Length: 111
Length: 116
Image (cartoon, rainbow over all chains, first blue to last red; front, side):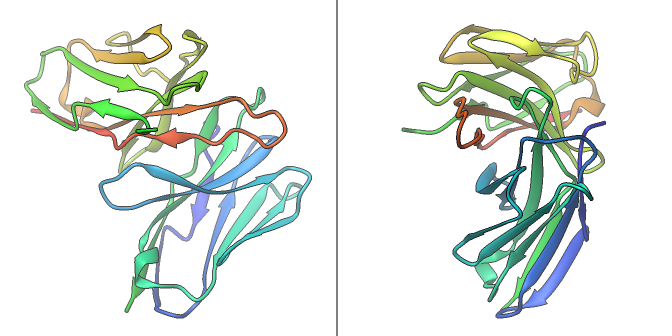
């Protein structure tokens, strides 16, 4: 399988704390993306990092990428109850056209 | 744009029945993906199309599954005959090739299938 794996599987934090999720993948990539899924809904794109980038920011999101370790992390700063969702990393295949998703991290932010 | 539209949102069917899931991608997108999500296996890529042509169907679990894309604005995923283990959420997603910035996939809300 080309799927990645997120770690931890589940994370529970207090509102205002930072949340860090990790993703490991197996094959070489062009890009790595993070998506969010609210319960009962489809996935929504959060941020994309290219293989030649090491860090990227978007609002309260910070993504890092270490291609030598085939790993990425997503940091959500100053978390809010509305951040409660599952978070997935997605890697593209050899052609860059198909996308493989990890198993997801379920984040619960307690108000 | 209305986004990726899937139907039905929910379907309960009896084992052995044919199930057809439908998808309308975002206009202008040339890639279409079908994913299946279960608690046990997570999100699995079943098949994807480029310009209406199936490119990789290696994720389709069995011959009972088939997918078509007769035109740029419509795709179907069919299961015949259905089995209880097919119960899952089936997502359709689309994207447009972005060489410089990378592709972003847009997902529909999913079709929740229960086979009893």
